[in-house]
Amino acid sequence: MKNPYKQCKVSGVHINLHRLLVEKKIGRKLGRFEYVHHINGNKRDNRIENLELVTPAIHAKRHGQWKHPKVKTCVICGKQYEPRPTKRATSKTCSTECRYTLLSNINRRPDAPCSMYRDGAYPSQVASRRRSARKSSSKPGKTRAQNGEGPSHSL
Image 1: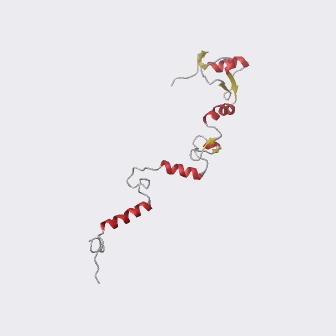
Image 2: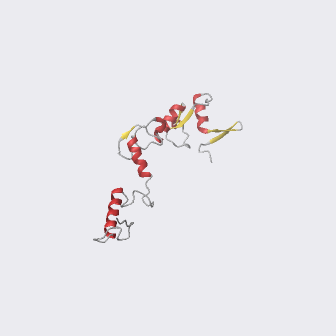
Image 3: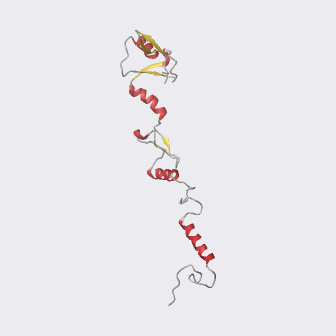
């Protein structure tokens, strides 16, 4: 992968130009944990007014807030909530109830042969279909045994 930053060669070593410019401005070499932040986000724009020397924590906040906001909207109920800091990237729901609803919606496969989410597959609908099937298959005036549907027991 190509380096997105402009580079120059100093004493036979490639160095990122934005770090070199900030070093010259402050008059010393930058430490390992001093970051140069591009204010406008363009990594190729190395104007000194676009460069800012920051700590790793501040740099992470500047980029982290944009990637994973502190306040999110629940995909189920639409409520605003604040996820735990370690779950900001993956959190989609505000509560356990909404999470279970989301998982239920994700795991539904209405086209599956045994799916309860097919039309007419709910237990009450299945029971009513069975009742109607029994009524239509048995002839009036005869018992199930006489129709050949079950064992005939004569006493």
